[in-house]
Amino acid sequence: TLRAQPTVAAIKGLEDGAVNPFRFCQELAATLERKGVKIFEDTEVRHISEERNKVLPHTKHGAVIAKTCFIMADGYFPVCGFSDPKMKKPRIIYAVVSTPLTSEMKSAIGWSGREIAWNTKDDFDYFRILPDDRILFGTSTEKKEPDLPTDLPLEEGYRRFTRDRLCQVFPQLKGLDVPYCWGGSIGQRDYPLPFMRKLGERVWGAGGYNGDGLLPGFLAGKLLTEALLEKRKIPSIFQ
Image (cartoon, rainbow, N blue to C red; front, side, top):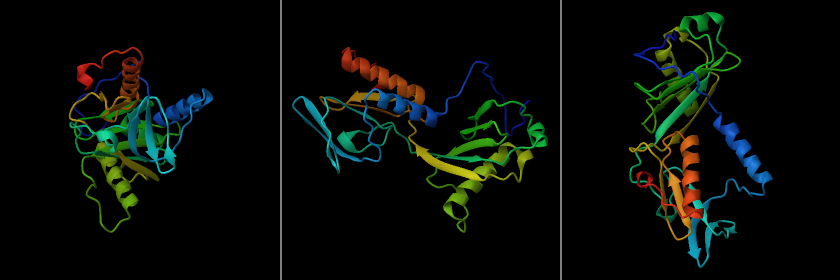
């Protein structure tokens, strides 16, 4: 039994799995490039204009001429009036990776396998044991900045904030070193589903994935493809 605090109840899924989103996106990009798709990273789109039979995303390097433009940018994107009226404040996510746990530490927290655990009771906590017995632990806050000591560098403050939350969940790991730390923000909607809509004659947009970007992203891509190629209507629950 996993001994985490505070835990009321849990559901264990025997057929669930997890995909590393970074590696998945890297391989997806490589597959698209092998098929002839060109990917331009670190290129800011400043505005988008439409002309007869074409759409032009404008960058500081010039304009790209396309037949159709898709904006897939979650909920914060200033061009074409692309915004989500149901978007809440961004949720800030922090994560740390610890030094390897000893067998005594693993026994103390009751974690013998490599299951992935999620705790949504108080904070959006998630954690798992990595192949080398390190613990990856993430948490979140709706505050732009958590309550951090002002005498610490910002990164060290994030590290302490997340490590303290880790030790609240697993008091048995008090004093555990966490040499790796990172963080970022995601758009959090009041509405649980992503949104998709037509933004212009040849411009489509989708976003509001609520931090569950892989599966809702696939769904958005499928529905937008069907709307464009098969002239199907996007279901009203996604608009």
